[in-house]
Length: 298
Image (cartoon, rainbow, N blue to C red; front, side, top):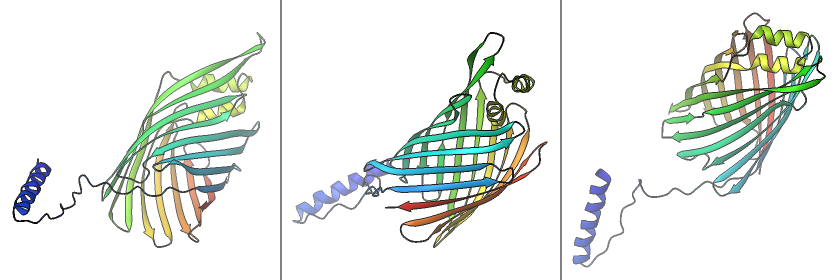
């Protein structure tokens, strides 16, 4: 209503001015004047990670524009960890499309794959919507995930696949009104189509019906994850501290995680992203992790 009254007053003012022989330019209207879209560029990244349990991770990423306001992101990685029965080797890749990135209203959709084709694989689809104001950044991200395990049946001599479908409701809120300080909260809650009993999962792994890789991956899927974060924007980058709590779906074991991440701009084209943290799972020894990423933009 106020915007309509404002436009009406502008029109009446223009009529009076034309009657007096002058035609002033209409004042700008912030509600309707479109801001020019930022120019999207290309960037490539490489990330390596290691923890005290000898888990090793390598990931490569590429961001590239498809149109002026449409950005595509592709990531591929590999993770190798040790267990009582040997190595657990998994691969991952993700593809994301983001419309109007860094604008007041941003939308996107992401697909993630994790696991390996012979033993276990997970497929996850996550749309998202982000709204930005002068002080707030709010994101809603519901999701759909399918976990597929390959089960051996030695008495019959064949294998079958079992699927577990889950839905998720996630979101993130960040407050930017204390510049250069920012703070936020994030969380995701998963809803599964049926229960996965821990005793049956352990028995399947013990008799070899499922692999150790499948057992490790399924045991690690989460029931929920919530956290808080705070950080500081600097001239040459940023630093952020986060703390989160989570619960696994199968064993119902809780865990705490603390992480300190930074971003350092080395030049207009190069940036470094160091990260260190501590993971404290219930019923298991704690572990320390670290990672370093390198980003080149052009």
